[in-house]
Amino acid sequence: MSGLLHVDEDEIGGVHIKYLLHCPRQLWLYSRGYRPEQGSDLVAFGEAVDETSYARQREVDLGAAKIDWVTTGAVVHETKSSRAPSEQHAAQVRHYCLLLERRGVTVRGGVLHYPVIRRTVQVPWNAVARESALEADHGARTVIGLPAPPPRLPRPQCRGCSFTDYCWGD
Ligand code: SF4
Image 1 (cartoon, helix red, strand yellow):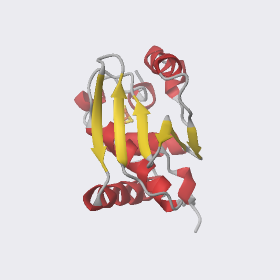
Image 2 (image 1 turned 90 degrees about the horizontal axis):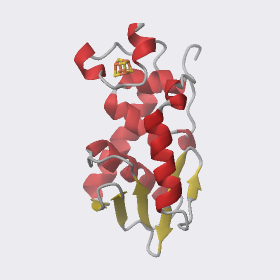
Image 3 (image 1 turned 135 degrees about the horizontal axis):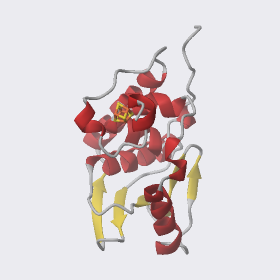
Image 4 (image 1 turned 30 degrees about the horizontal axis):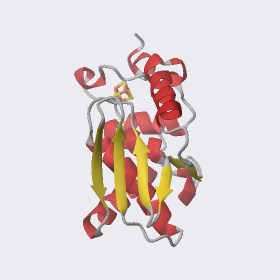
């Protein structure tokens, strides 16, 4: 069908899920190759934390999605530079659990690591979590397949978004 972007199973990654939950328009723009955050200090900081905090952990590459490592029993670990645990982070981990399960791996659950605040958060993997992951996966595909970008969020909700220049012309 013209105007629709075909998305293979592996092309939905953790970033897609994060953007979907933050703003569908952000996901749509990202899926079209828009990358305003590449020069962001915040992103650079996050990558630095990823590189230094768990440098000796094995990284597993699931195509578009990356996870920090998988321990025995398939526990998905993900490191965040944020100071605040969020539902977006948990949704990303659930998505990685889903990707692993689709490859026949028995997944026990996930753990979010916040080295800056020295905290970990458990992310259960069960029927409810699987349903939530499937819904997010479907939602991301639906947004990416839209022929035009979804509307902007109300301006106050755009504060701090790296796509602000593009959406608002600031
Ligand atoms: S600036 Fe606002 S509307 Fe644009 S992608 Fe970011 S959150 Fe969405």
